[in-house]
Image (cartoon, rainbow, N blue to C red; front, side, top):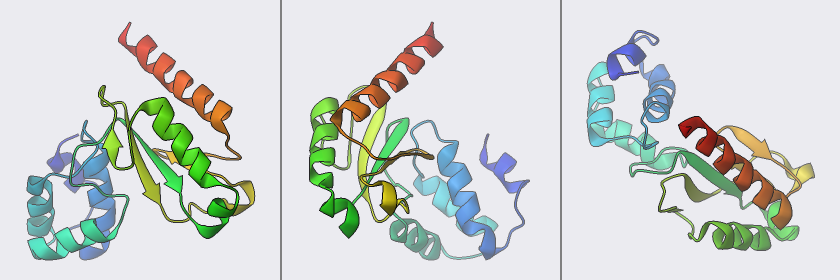
Length: 157
């Protein structure tokens, strides 16, 4: 879907900025917003580039640099810390051989930290793209990654 297809879905009012930005990012194979995207949104909404840029920098779900196909967000809320999310993050880092704000060499996974994901009763929690995974441990995480890799491999066959 190109930018013009996104336009057809939204009126050119500033209230639609977040939805337009999400659509543009979600339709970018590298899962990020380009400078051209931000300029285009500013022009379409009749606002300044700096106001669009400010929104993108404020919300952690937006990225200005390429990311993997699957963006992993690990909750870093106080409750998740209490149930030892440091071990969770370390397990993910070890399994994927990347650090926070990094992407795997195959561009499949990016790892990010996020504020509360809203599932405190089931902590520790992570989100991969739009799917939430709860009550995690190293074994569950390993199975999730293996499943994603297997599905991606089967799509290529």
